[in-house]
Amino acid sequence: MAASLQERTERAPRDEGRSPGAVMDRLLLQPNGLPKPPSRLWAWITAVLMVASLYMIFIYAPIERTQGIPQKIFYFHVPLAWDAYLAFFFTLVGSIAYLKTGRARWDVLAHSAAEIGVVLTSLVLITGSIWGKTIWGTWWTWDARLTSTLVMWFIYVAYLMLRSAVGENDRGARYAAILGIVGFIDVPIVHMSVTWWRTLHPQPTVLNPAGPTLPGSMLAALMVTLVTMTILFFYLLRERMLIEHLRAEVHALTDRALEQQLSEVDA
Amino acid sequence: MSYMFAAFVVVWAGIFLYILYWQRQVRDLRGELAALRASESARADSPAAGR
Image (tube, each protein chain N blue to C red):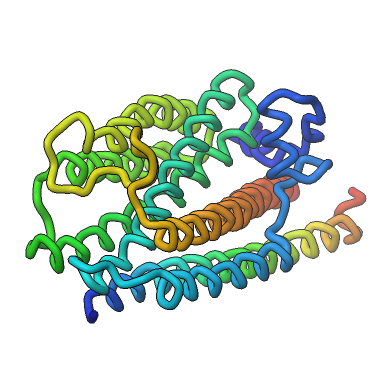
């Protein structure tokens, strides 16, 4: 147990090569291997972009003719879903890399991204329900997109529950990594569900094989919000990874203090 | 209109509460770490540590 905690607070220097792992290291880690703390500049950029998104959504983008104002929920709902996919992709990458290398930093990445993904998917489900109530007249229907998204939410809630049940050790990290890899199978199913099955949910408006079906001003508002949400995601990921690292350091120091106290009592 | 505002409040309030909760955790953890490090160095300096 002590060894695994020590390993979880490892400060191996980051990889400076050209592999995907090295790119990820440079994005998320300081040269000494510690997670990069979210900088003030990053926070300010996110805040300014959020204000720009609000301007684009409520002032720049026109009101949709058939749905009216509730259509503006779409500008939150779609970027949140994109961020959730991104979060679960990071969980997949972190899980594969952890099983391959055994380095705790990858497990921290997978765990942090999964937690953020669950929060974002919860917001996707809530905003989707609110939109559904206004347009379909119901909060929920067992449509393929809604059901597969709910399944995705359950998979990653199970991932977090597994972690808290097994504990912060190598065994827990390995089990979670397997679930993080297998669970990702549902992500493309969620995305393709509107194409594969007949659903009530609207068809893709941007990643449509025939090209984007949105008018230019609406597409611009969506793109600004997508960029904002992506930057917000990286802000959240850095902050979450920092917490995980601080927590591991507290555990390691507490363990060391206990061991010292025990050895003093024995002496 | 009210539904749209409900969605707006859920999204932004959800994200901001999540960030505030984390910032509190970072502050608490940093405080805990500082206290643990201080007690560790105090133990190392104490005469009992030399035995």
